[in-house]
Length: 502
Image (cartoon, rainbow, N blue to C red; front, side, top):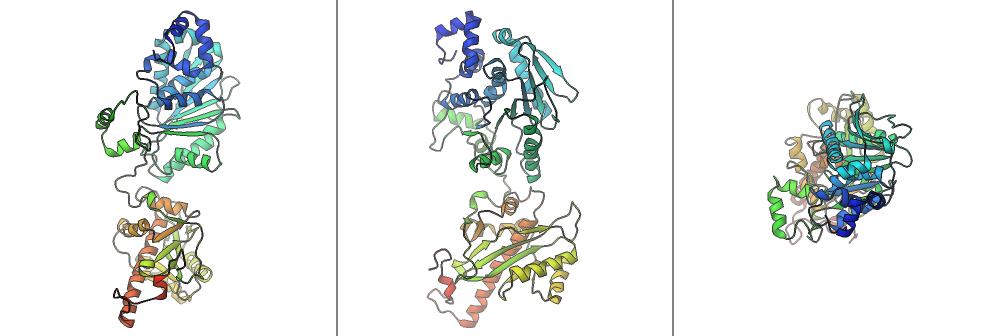
């Protein structure tokens, strides 16, 4: 028995049902360490006490827990807490536990049932119970004495209108409803998020409590979206992260991992460094073939504007798609303000890039309108990819008085995006704080996202801008000669810092 409960008190609780039910109904901490003492093999860590405290302190406050593998989070939250929520002071009547797959749901139900069947004291205090299956394939444990039910289901099962007697779900727990595969594409991430917001949450009522347990698998995963919503005040609840080692390298569970050797021994059991970083240190690790990483992005709050002394013009990259079918690609335009030259070059991506399904005449009209309204100056540049039928668009634009530069793509899409990576990482390219979320997501998720049209337009814009800068410098040096001490031509805007104006 964990030393949180004094031995003499344990003896009293074992002998007297009124004593133990009185104590354990009021405290989930005591409930867990008494009825689930066989799970407590090491001294309970402070973070585990905090999880237990957050579970027991409120009947309605939403809770989101991210903790390292083997931390006991599922045992506490998914196996033990639903039982206490029914038996204890919270008096929940209808708990639904969601897992990602039906196999996982079945395993969770088995874990709960096995505990109830094999734990004689718990069975006497909570029982009797019976297992039921319904027409949509979920499995339930019904506690008639308490008028309560626990149902376990997978995320692909419909729960619309589900009730237990007069009760709608008043406790909903989601345990690992995402994995690495399901978070790879934005489509998959949206599916999980929309399922939660569109089916799970509406199935409850105003006093329903939502608890989600999982891991940080992607910058845009379900838990990361919820974390951001809480930070922005768009959602309510408590979000907690518990890595095995904190930011100072201190182990959160010294009772189990008493020294560095214990941690190294645990690490040796893991198949890869990526798994260790993701599952134990809670770091979001992209796949090995990722081209652009989220930590590279640098943002601006205020655009220097076209009146800045170093301003060179507005440039735009255009990626074309001829079909307007639902499955087709999008015609996209990514534009930027370009400042300075050479080592002072800065490219400020403009917010709200265009992404539409258009036929050829509509593309021509769009380019004419975009050029006249967004790029009216002589020095502004419109780059259009010149492949197959797309070669006709620059010609058509010329006939309509719109100057566009046809660009032959260099290499495949991945190669072209890779060529932009240094400029992103070094801060030559800056992104708006808001308005480019979809573009950034395509850059980060290139290769796994369903669409990459904005990423293609971005690559075209950046590589063409860099080529233009390089070619222009070469031409001017050849025409004007080398005037500075480093062997290059002196331009006023070469030595203007865009941010300081000096």
